[in-house]
Length: 409
Image (cartoon, rainbow, N blue to C red; front, top):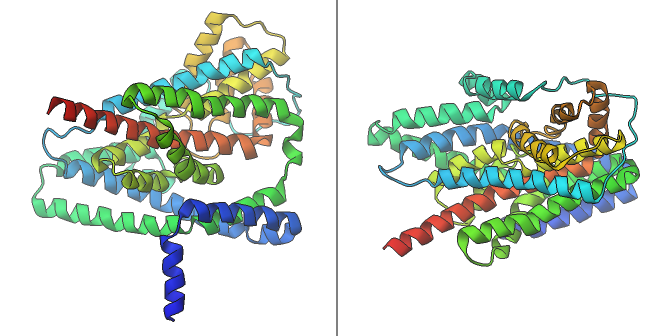
């Protein structure tokens, strides 16, 4: 019995990243040896993602409300610079995608089948949807994972409870810590969940489904790597004035790896919360910035929208000038902020960008279909970039604020 406890304690205290790596390798090996066996463990991945999605809305609501309610007067949350970083990073991603698409123009083989989901028809519809998400019923927002609505109600409740008695604030603080403990338990199950996700993915698709879109994937993944390893580090360096790569690599390793396999920024919120706590960031800041980043910090989505749109433009022989390319970058960045925090959310915004070039909705939806074909890689990489950048920019803003405070004192 003591030996079993000792083994469990070692697993619980061991490196989560290393355990996830073991889960990835085990999943690939299982899919290679037996497709049926790999498909039979798919439920492990579904259970893990389901647990994350179930706990994330409650975590966000409670943490946001509790942090604002217990916030000391005149406390600085550093939200303004974080939002600026989010928007700057998303626009930089769109510009990078435009440049890569011009350097490596890609042709698509447009297929006849189209997606059945209706995309938004314009920026006005995207903004309208966001506004109505804000005033969503709080119970419905929690049930459907509407993080805009959850944030709005969490902030509102926190502001009201800010003037409540100390006993009420203590209760909310205790509930917040209790939910956080539940999240830590779910995250410790990540290696098992990712083992199931990897095994099922390789068993279902392997590399055959994406082999015909090698150049398109190369442009997409190349753009995301440039943002993750070049552009974001430059932005962070200007913010913290030191070597950014230790922080960049930590965020990619401990947030990006999990997000790659869950393929959901919303599901990765608990992982990012835990990483922010590990980095010893201010809870008042990251409890708001992380769920907000899962909604508006969408550099990967901006890249997907831009690259696939310009691939369609090049395929149809449409000429694009510099001003139109800049306009596309702005539209892609704004549209990306309206992308949902679930798998494939950015693909349905491609017709919106295609409309800038007079491309019909029928053709645009064929491009969306191509996106779903390569989604096993594209959407995973996109989510990894989006989610890891949430922590990266939050940590950068917190460190810059601390440095400024030390300089003043």
